[in-house]
Length: 388
Image (cartoon, rainbow, N blue to C red; front, side, top):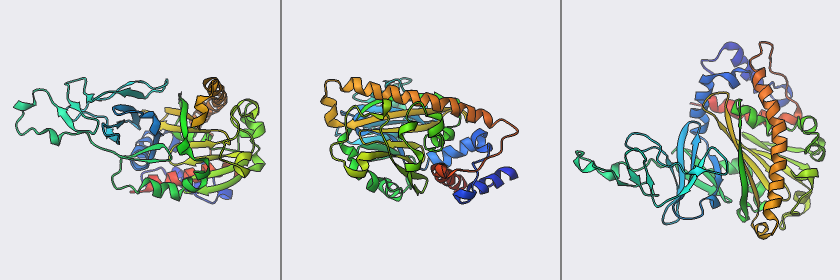
């Protein structure tokens, strides 16, 4: 890599060795503002990013707003029912046009309207991105509303999940998912027949990669989570399958609920091996993925405004027929509370990781065979930082 101190370059090379010889990444990658800026350009502006679920846009005019690595975006459903994604920046002065109300306590927004109107000067856009009205534009020489529509972003879906990409030249979403073996691995779960039951956010004073890595780190489960889910997710049962920039780790065990006991029972259409355990997986670049035999939890991990800030959002999905159960919401709350309990354990350690990067005594240690996911994620990360 260019423009990196020699010890950092050498450290990156050690990370790229085979797992049994590899070391974790040097502190520089978790503390450098220059690296943070490079990540936004080389990773978050190039990769397919999972933004949630299709059913969150439940009617024409509904929209979601996000801030992705500093870039404001809006995803909406137009009057014809088509999904659209745009830069959430007015073509006049650059103010944000769509805000919405806080979405389930997350720092992102949600709303529904007939059009999107800039609150600064009143430029108004249809949900398909066309500029409908710009006050007093008749006196602007050569002005044509067709020249000032919202800047579109690529949007694609898979199994009910929403993805966007800032890069017009990026490969298709399905090419990337197939490369990571997601459609084949998770086709039996039929996530198109699930619905979003809940979501919540969490914010940490750390680099986003520490959250990403912690949530795919199997090595720590039996120690840190001994009082939550560790006892019923045994390390030795794991079958690891690395893929480019991620992994699939199948294990025999229970679900992510108190005592590991499902409150809903096994998904009706799965059986055999899938009904006996679950997976911990990772969808590059920022989605820890936790399928269990009764539900799916996945999390999106977003870089904050500075190198030591991170925003995470946790999504909980269940088969759609469960939503009719009279005690459905009460049961979902129990799952949510349990997830927050073990996340609190993680957050304490992740903060300690970030603080350790400031120590002059820190030297990256070797990777365990239970850190195969971190090895895969880190190597793809370094590959993307080096890419031109």
